Length: 81
Image (tube, rainbow, N blue to C red; front, side):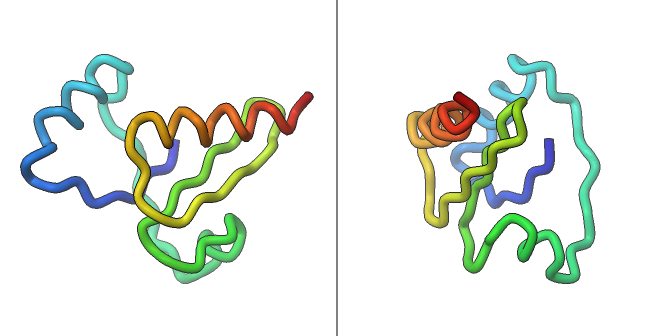
């Protein structure tokens, strides 16, 4: 998992609870000189990228709610079929 995000302070408890539920205790951060943005087609923020187990990649620029994130994952998975 690679994450770059801004979580509003009023949603921090929810974000921490979700990370705990999913078993995420941390992940490496990267210093991006632009190559990561180029590789994943990110041209603005906020942005999200879903990569399926089969390697399909879907990028969405704009804010996502939980359902939007799940839809993005499903879209990446559907490209493997």
